[in-house]
Image 1: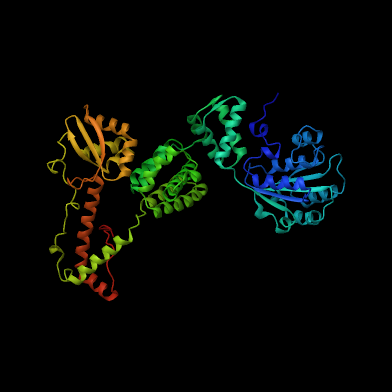
Image 2 (image 1 turned 120 degrees about the vertical axis):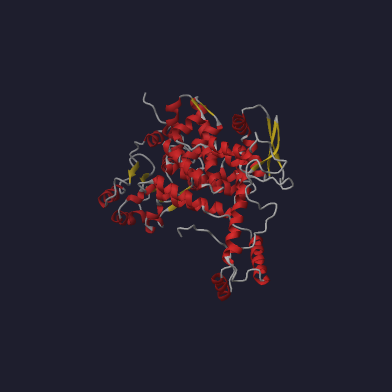
Length: 550
């Protein structure tokens, strides 16, 4: 006996079997029970959500020997013929291959004849939007006043292409995409009946990949079964479907949030060498940032992002580290990039350019911080300490505080810093070489305590502390591999300002800020700048160094 694919074997045969379309099944059941049957129906929706299946079930409900009934028996000759697709009174027409007006004229002639044996003659026209304009016009009169024994059921994935004159003569039903959870439950039931092993996470991955289509989910399950046999694992699904590893998405997102273009470009090179579909990567990254946005906004995001609680807990620190505005900008960029990638002959270049642009998106400043900056500039202007005529070589020294110094040289930090073997900057540089993701985490930490057999790494923000705890084993391996010695490694969450200790990220920012202040002082002393400020009654908001070439 030939093999029947899962999508056909588990095709719903009654209203109760249809998943995710309760708003339609209830309406049709009530119509059958009350015998208020319309002469025309238009079923619209994405692929694989039950449009043609619902049309067949409706045909069985109306033509069953025990009917009209909301529970067709699926045993009588009419039900079995409709199920097998060979009923002479239920005619299925492919609108994509019967588009001409001549096909519709033939249909108009046939509707005049009474059903051969059933109660109704039912015409199911799939992909009806493919009919030509002339064909639609030829169908109008028949659809408006059909014979009492004729019912039309139209199915389409693009209802906007169906003329409104056709839609107004039908009852229109829109089939929704099926929720991930319902598809997951259906796949688990199929696995139980078929006798193969699949866990909840594996079923959920297939459901997500199907994008709301039950038929696609069943077809993917068939494909994966052919690959791995009676035991399906998450690794097998990722291999067959080309699903991007979550750690890759983590690394890319951190690179974008930290504005590290080099790390992001290296990641694209890695993906390209592995043969990863860049369009799929862009789509997955867009979904990843969408999840971060939902976690940041919603108190209970689990209902809308369809991932496990542990995964939400893992993403929450990342979502807290980035502003809502940047997340929105990331999603918009990726949405445009995905469209460009599908059309481009050079998708890698398109993706690289887009990701570099995303690293240039500046964090939004708090309004209070902006006001404080403006007030400080205003005080300097009115205080007279920015008068013209001052030569650039005699710029006043930029005021420095304990938190705004330049990056100290290795081995010349305060007496409480680590001894020479524990050179924190070299340790972090080594981590960046071995694993950029670990290196980026350690850049936000500082060496709190260093003893011959003990090292304590401090973090000032909870997000970085949580990320370090999540990668504790990997950090241990990298640092111990560098130090070549046995010692205990622990993490702590505290403010290192009291000891004057700073993270490498803070030191880099301090150095950048100091150079920026020097540049600001230099140009504010220029009489041309002062005259421009006086004429336009303006204030300097920012100063940038574009280099000698500019």
